[in-house]
Length: 262
Image 1 (cartoon, rainbow, N blue to C red):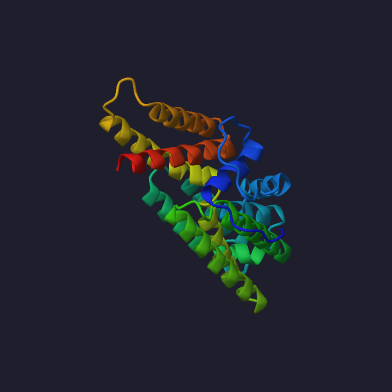
Image 2 (cartoon, rainbow, N blue to C red; image 1 turned 120 degrees about the vertical axis):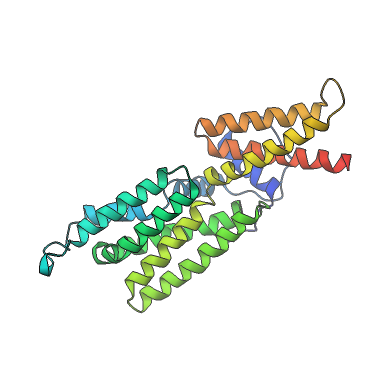
């Protein structure tokens, strides 16, 4: 992907519009992510590697760990059990429980994963994460969401560690860093950013509505309400790019209105 200037939030909103197809226009930016590049980046984001997906590939590639001495569990059996824990973590509602299950899965599964996963699969996963990282730093890196920026920075650091560990032949350390990077970058996809942004918008909108004294409600308030509602509907329909584009626009209008009142 060629180098380009980073996009500010309004630029991101318009760039997403290339795929989202919505009539809510915003100011024309100086630069846009070409639609082909954006589509490719979002395709990668939708299928970023995870511990569970890497374990699945390793298990499909053959159970080379079977038949270990002294009746020990095979690498494949240990990895399958760890993958089951990771899948439970992915579906857990409680964040603390999800974190506990994920930590347990990684502790039990990293060693057999390093034994069973082909080196080419490791490199392919690393390249996919690096490709999304480069795109995300332009697409969501300027979104003024500290947690997203921290996740991008953490992902970059861990990917560097993973590549350095592979260079010296320490594939277990390489995979541990790779899995950590995957977890952090999962928080930077359009789906994750939208889910983080919507509660913030809904809380801000509720605070604004509670202090609004005009009747009927100001047109700006009704506009933000419409955008937030349609962003939530887009999320419910799995249209994360469209939802994120509307959420960013609603955020601009909400912040501008609050600034005017203050």
